[in-house]
Image (cartoon, rainbow, N blue to C red; front, side):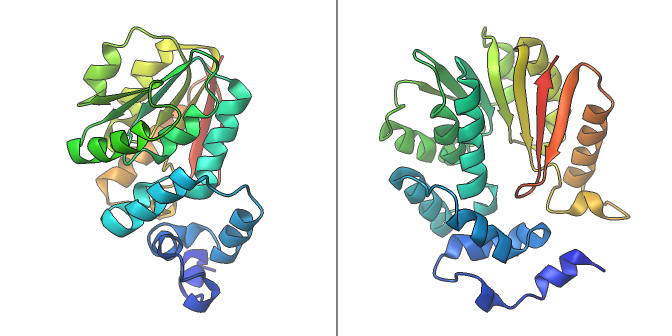
Length: 241
């Protein structure tokens, strides 16, 4: 059975349509996840704090690429991972409107910093506005520009890295950051199902092809421990050996 087709046929009334961000997510990326399961998981997870909720709603109403936002469940996972690691230095490649950075920052140890990189100036300006209103305003450092150039110039040892930017550069990002990740440090890469396109018999889109290439590249490596988390659009969780 085509599970994606089955989920597309589920009636809209099963969704909480009073929350536009949930319906947009279902329409754009949740063909892989039963929307009832998504709502159940959110209902039994700690709610977003007020600022994260504001970012979520603002992005849903004002940004044409809302599906890029990590959202409630993935954001909570990022926070939990960060709190378990208690990182001193976090690197995020792909800031978007700032939601994921604020989730990750919650696990920073005393004196810790998070560096986040965004190519698009408009998105960076939105994110900075939210960062300025948070309790991490002096601990989140926002860089604007090409991540490949910026990362190379950062003289840091990373405890935790989150890759969520242009899919065609995932392998280059990984190669660039891995030498700077401490032993037993972690790397997370988002969208490794690429809206389910990686499961198709014939993959035509260049971004989906790039993600397939990245997934194969990671699977073949023996210098990292890795697993795929079937959350949202897929997360690759990797530990440097």
